[in-house]
Image (cartoon, rainbow, N blue to C red; front, side):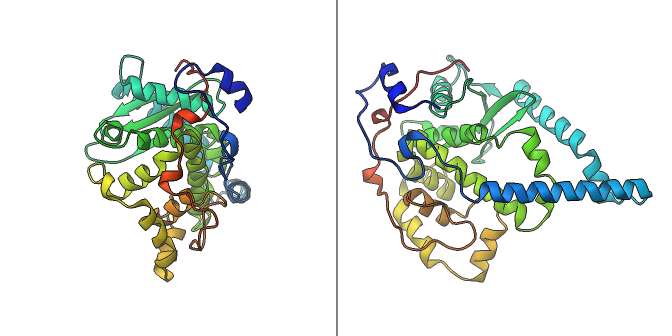
Amino acid sequence: MYPPEQLAPQQTWGPPPVELPPRGLSPHGRPIRHNWEIPLLVLAIVITVVAYAVSGVMLISGQVSDIAAVLLVAPILLYVLRGQNYATQRVNGIRMTPTQFPEGYALVADAAARLGMKTAPDAYVVLGNGQINAFASGHGFRRFVVVYSDLFEVGGEARQPDALAFIIGHEVGHIAAGHASYWRQLGMFASNYIPVVGSSLSRSMEYTADNHGFCVRPQGAPGVMGVLGAGKYLVGRVGFDELADRSMTERGFFVWLVNILASHPVLTWRAAALRDRSRHGKLFFRPTADRLPTPTAALPPPTQYPTAPPKTL
């Protein structure tokens, strides 16, 4: 990590850093892991270990089912899929460099430095064909971020560049939080097939990554919710506070069901979590009234936060 007192003297661009109050779940630029992530991860690992034990017993007894067979080959399968995914970006993606997508390159380097990573991950732009998406993954000791071209366009001057910075901070945050680790993904493997457990763990990880994105570019949160809800062209028409307010009024069994089975927090709950930085995002039940709302106008410009010097990509 880069403590503020160490970062401030290194800043050589923008106005001088100023003292800012703690920002809830990202106090002093240190993002906090969602409080349900570790308990659910432990549960997922226990489920996977038990599943492997049962599969081993079945193998010894000669009664191997299709599910047991998938579990037994999962370590090799996961390794191959991760390697194939990385190779696909290397041969088909456009790598961000100081001369190719220099703005994105700088955002990745800044996010990695701010989040305390020794080396910034590789970053690629791939053809989106209208899809709004980005993801982080890895293979071996390498980590990388992929941004779809349509989402990268959000960084254009005509739209909201802060949204792109938040998204990149979110994806780099997945890496900084260990979400792209081979061993973590293998440990979670069996839980992905257990209703509620796998999806809830995934949502908690997304909230953790949002805490990282908020740490990197807090004022990008409204734009991200806008582009995820209405797309890159209508992002400016979305009312962030209206979206967050609906998390408390949209209720019912099927609203709960949609969220509980989703890999990402539903958008209204996610907006509420980004606005109220005094508590963790709701995982199982809808949000109640904000304790500490953070209006868009109250979000400080990025140059007021200490920034570590960019690292090589």
